[in-house]
Image (cartoon, rainbow, N blue to C red; front, side, top):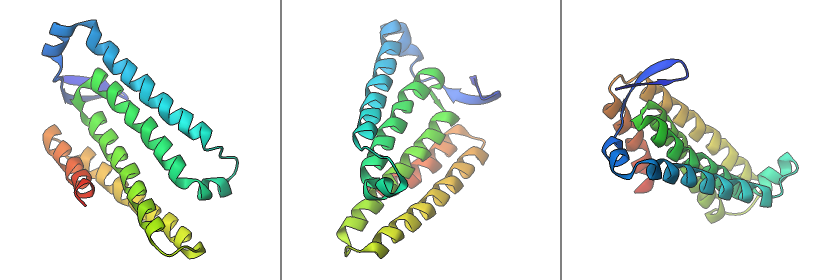
Length: 163
């Protein structure tokens, strides 16, 4: 099955077709409520972080990271509802892994010796993690087979989950 995404026809596997026949509109409502609830949690957390300048982002970077992680995770429900298991979902999974890497780097930072250089090194390592995930996203887009693409994204996500 092909599904349109940003003007492209991408192969997808609509795995909830049988579930839609059984649950009907209720399944779509579950996806929508999951999106709205998770996105609201992230937005509220971001609002509560009270970030007013870049210095606030540096001092509250873990709060900002967790809020953005929740907001980005909310899009899983929408991508799953509209496209099922597809390239947009794979790309979202890679972006999801980026925030997981950021959280692990924050844990590393708080476990290290306190000081200005540790915080600067955190942002350097986060930049390298972002570059790494950009490469993973590029690899996932270049792999023509959907399930191999999903396997590549999961490989780099599972490495972090088991670390």
